[in-house]
Length: 157
Image 1 (cartoon, rainbow, N blue to C red):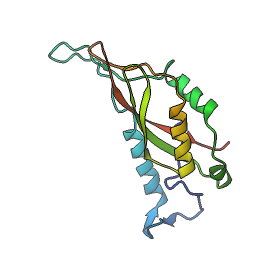
Image 2: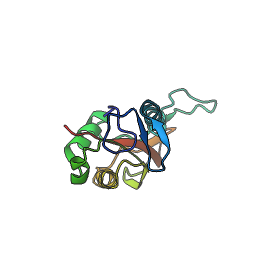
Image 3: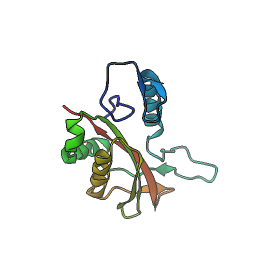
Image 4: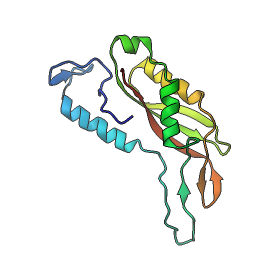
C-alpha cells in the first residue's frame, strides 16, 4: 500500500516539469516529496499513548479494523473495484479518507480529504460504506468515538 503515487492523478509524462491546471509549473520531484509528506501526515488521526499521564491514565488506543492492518489491507485488495475510466487512463495513486469510528464500531461520516480522480474518490467512499464494524478506540479503558485517517491505494497490475 505504500508505493509512490502520481501527485495529480493524471497520466505520467516523461517531461520533468509539468504545468498544472492552474497554469503554474511544478517540479515532479517536489510534487513527489509533497505527496510523501501528505502520506506521513495521514497516519491514523490518533496515536497510541502507552505512557500514563499524571492522572494515572492507561493511555489511548486508536480504533482498529477487525484483525489488524493485515486484514484491512486484505479487505481493501479483495473489495476494491478499479474504476473503468481510471484504468483506461492509467490513473494510479492514493485517496486519503477520514471517518469516525463510533462506540459500537460503526464507520460513520466518511470524507475524502485528498482525492485522486472523482471515480476513485467514490470507490474509496464505497469501500468505507461496506466495511465491517471496527474495534472502537479506547481512552483510560473507556470505549470512545474516534476519528481515523487512512488512504486507499489505487495501482494497476
